[in-house]
Length: 194
Image (cartoon, rainbow, N blue to C red; front, side, top):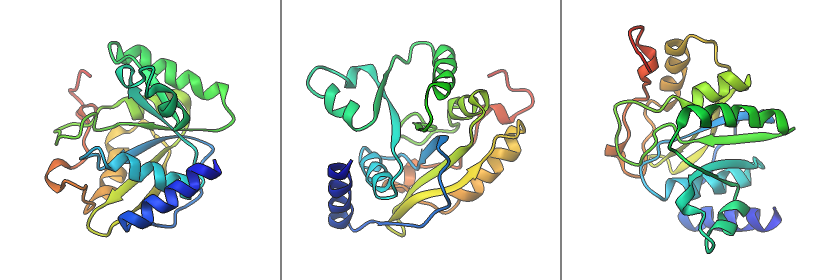
């Protein structure tokens, strides 16, 4: 952990990013990391988490965890996942919280580095099923800052909870500004079938 902290401090210093103060991060939570507009967002988020003492775990597609890079990604908190059946993945990840005293799980809400109309709802469903809060992590190119924002306890009112998330991310700019749209879930619509 000391090595990761030192490397993180150096990384942020060289890139001239600052970590903002935040409220206490719960021991168990689902973390949204946004905006996710380039491959560089994630290393910055990882470095900020290390500096703040938040030991995050993150999801990566199984192809990333090959014999060469797999051990490094696991050391960095990576969890290899098959994305073929997201329904099973949500249940499996929600159940994982019962096996840990501490688990801050980063779930990629946008699902891609491109601009999307809707976020994937897995982060919300995992948090609801596991009975844990959602923490909004961010990088903001306009201020060259990032860190962890509000802790949101899912109420079951998806639109009201997403209004809180939208308010937090309003005005934040990813490294590629044109790739981040207002956070929205398909599940917010009463007629939604997802």
